[in-house]
Length: 230
Image 1 (cartoon, rainbow, N blue to C red):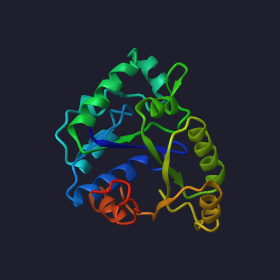
Image 2: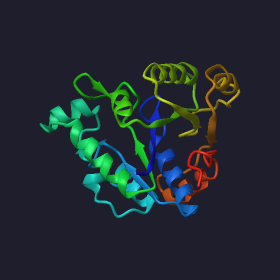
Image 3: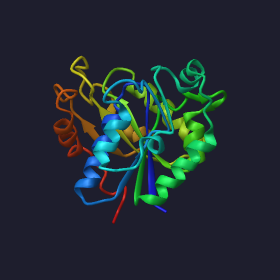
């Protein structure tokens, strides 16, 4: 059975897909066999969507319905998007897809949905899914004011559930965030939480228009080589 890592964020839009794709790209460049999964995709009618990008980054031929068992068009929390689409989400189906992919790949990267307290079904949150799958977590946080608060809350909740935190990534998704890591208290955040920095990802202009090149550039900014030792 392959090793796995869950990639979550401190909020929606912090760059989970960017980090997941960059990590998959880095691992593939090292000749590693990488699978990818996004248990629930919302905003599925956007092209390319997150699942399309994950599949391309990992260079896998796994069917999209296995990579993402639930693909919903409404760009809302999964519980709400599923209700709007009248599609019941079954956690057992997610578990089965996860087990299948993990058995087929040496490494499986699972990208979450929003932050860890986003509901997947009623009273079952992303945090519950992480605990169920038994994975360590890489936390992506945004290079903007609020990073200390959101990061510490996320880490504390993960630790309450005894989920191992494999590191923090500080991502700068756009140019409207003029704060340096020092402005945001990044060194102090790492020291106070005892969490390892897994990289500071700089803003890439026109990332949407030059996705592959941008992701390749960002993959070199990750400090993740010891996560999956050969």
